[in-house]
Image (cartoon, rainbow, N blue to C red; front, side, top):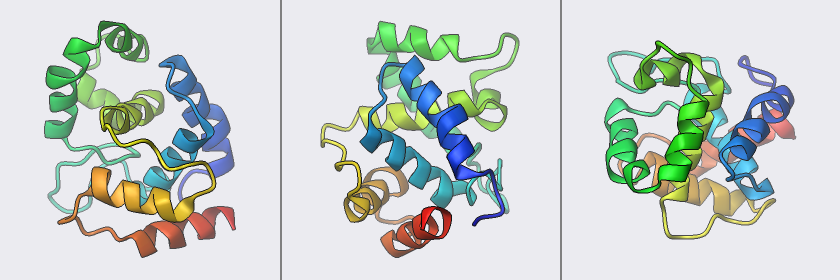
Amino acid sequence: MNDGIDMTQLRDQVVRPALQAIGLWSAAAEELLLGTVLQESGGGHYLHQEGTGPAVGICQMEPATHDDIWANFLAHQPDLAQMMTRLTLPGVSRLQQLGGNLYYAVAMARVLYHRISAPLPAAGDLDGQAAYYKRYYNTAGGAASTAQYLANWHRAFG
């Protein structure tokens, strides 16, 4: 058990509906996003990166990454961009949505993974998901490890 959001509730009430709302749900994507939340924010414990880091939200996305997705990917995917916009609250900037809008934060992380040409690892392939997360979300120079990802997953889901 983690000291963040109950992962079953997060899956059922946030991750699945958010991914379905943008047309990018699959069991594999759902698992990868849950693993990302567990690794990046301690399962929703942190909504802003500890210390002076810039990352925000339950997926700890950096503002530069967020803005790059909008400028260089969603700008060329009008249907997906429209679905993402529908997830936002009026009068709140997109960057602020990352910290306070769970649907948006999860959907943005899914879009980050979606823009990668390599297919998602299969549902149930936790080792593959950990490696995919490390390579494409955290990057080689990031502090996270595949072992941490797996330990967090097993702590939350057994």
